[in-house]
Amino acid sequence: MQAAQLLQHLTTPGKFWRNYGIPTLAADDPYYNAMGYWNGPVWVQWQYLIFRGLLHYGYVNEAQQLAEKVFENVIHQLKTNHWFWELYSPDDYRAGWHKTYIWSGLVARMLIDLYGPSVGMSEKMLKAVPQKLELRQNYPNPFNSVSIIEFSLPRRAFVSLKIFDVSGRQVNLLLNEWLDPGEHRTKFSASGLASGIYYYQLVAGKAQITRKLLFLK
Image (cartoon, rainbow, N blue to C red; front, side, top):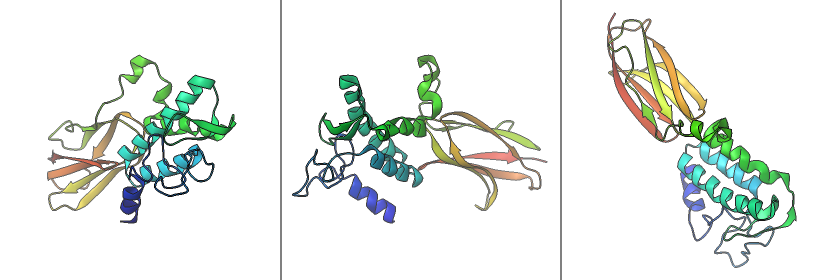
């Protein structure tokens, strides 16, 4: 509940959800200054902490949007004058105070957290990164001992893969961890379970997909 309220506050354009990141002071505050050091600019290290918090609470889309806002100004400055700056304007292509601040390199960490090490791959390999979340039908199905479950992950996310019986009771937890984007596969052993219909549910961030499988001893 608190996370949702904070998200609503942060994503208000007239206050914090600016063109190139989240300012240190709300934009509707009379003391707001986009380049005013502590009362307005974007500091990349703070953006990273907010970004990680959004990922932690499952707000993957908002985390991606924030990262892209920050990337745009940082990359513009790198292309224009080849420096990382201490701070950046949340409203336009400005940066300042001191240059060569290494903490602005956290934009690279954001890329890795979102997309995994694939950001350094060739264009051909990048095209192989899935475009959407997909949970495939297990195979074989029906099965009598072990079945394979495959899914596609378009971006780095915290993923859980659970098995439920027809009453909705969880009977197995196959995955519960951060995963990088790409194609993933796991084995499900039905040892100890009764024959019948079961459901496998994939949760990645805020997205959820459920499919049915049939176990026959």
